[in-house]
Length: 270
Image 1: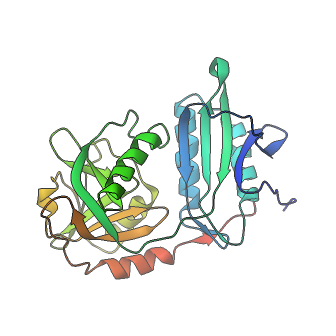
Image 2: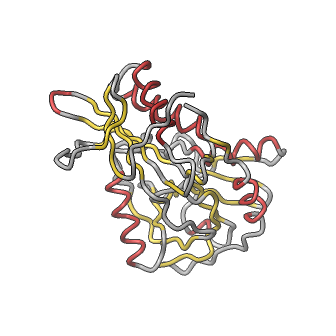
């Protein structure tokens, strides 16, 4: 293993041959084309390889650097991530001048983590422009979450034109119908979440029926509903804010949370 890189908290830009360097104060944020983030706790990450593949694939889809450059960038990011403490880093591909593309690492301390969630049940229309790619719509989603917080919740739910539940502002939404684990159909504009993929695969391995179903918010009344993402893992919905809905008992959530919390593995050397 080569020498560990040290970039420090904040924004770093990446240049082939030079690697990551702390961004100058004068650097401007271009349009965000791709982003990916994950939780690092004492040098351990859940699904790190899956985040890598999702980010590299999304970069390739929107004119990012070639595969070799992307791999070099990811190696430098991996070397720069802290092995102590709790962090929530974000990798970015931004648009520069004259059609250029810039790769960045934003090293951020992890925010406080939660074990349950209050959802704002006044479904927000889906105003994302690129729902299948994380990055371009982060500002839109931040406004949805901000409105939910103003209403006393922690997350807001996005719905399609017909009122069908899609996902929350920062997480995938799953629910249980009897012994069936349900999630929105892939034909809907839903981000391919890393954590929801892990949950779904475990259910299949365990012989649990998994179904893609279209449901309105009202049809989730009284059910066990989860939100899952890379930061908080799995959080059962314990209350709905804004509509007369009842959160179902979180019967299955504790065991699944414990399983997810045991998945993080040490970061590779590079």
